[in-house]
Length: 339
Image (cartoon, rainbow, N blue to C red; front, side):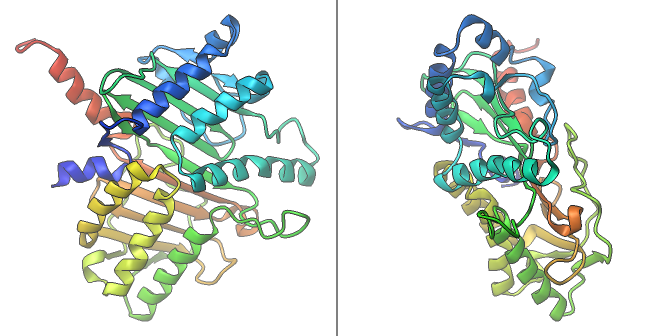
């Protein structure tokens, strides 16, 4: 069961074989996007699948490889957003574009429109996209400040980690965008679980001081953290619901065809999940929490910077981000026996 759970835990490493599947939709969207580019633009957007750049992911405001949204004309931009939408749910598209739009809020706050640019998001295509059923090994990335979505497609299987969403401000406190809070529900659900566990005397808090950021940072391979906190098997039925609600909130950014079967499988193993908290216990305090499953996957959330109004959230597979395990199985099948 753990082998299957490892795939499900990434949210998106599940077989897709029906017409209109995520893998096919991504292939078609990527091909349409590339067809609309001129030769120079296509060269900027395209990489070999084996290029090291495929695992060079970031979530800070820096220049990236790929083609930038600001380099696209209106028609090309439509195809760019169609590609983004091929990997996300309607809610995920809303959250992603809201996060991007917050760059305008930061530009006004910091008086730095160059650094804080809503068009400074990049698309990179790795390998040759396939729109055929269960064929092709390729990948794509949509990335910029506080957003890194990484997809690997192997013969119809889709793997989508690392998946990162961040927001600064975590909640907009004034102006026409007042109250905007893209990751707020995930934080609220985790705080409710933390309070319930603490009231029950469970060792949920591992430190009164939160780490500065998510512990996995932007590492290509996420290190496994210490076993800390409370396991699902030691929770009440209501606490287990809250625990799964945290994961479902993150997973709901992903297309339902991928997120739903993954979450169903994770729910079957809820007792092996572990929840832990660090930092303040009341709203507005710097804090950090994570959910892990016995070294298979980890969801991290940190809201500690800028007066605890700057949040980062990520879903990682420890050894299998970027489809490493599925790729290994694919290569083992491709190689002749004995080679």
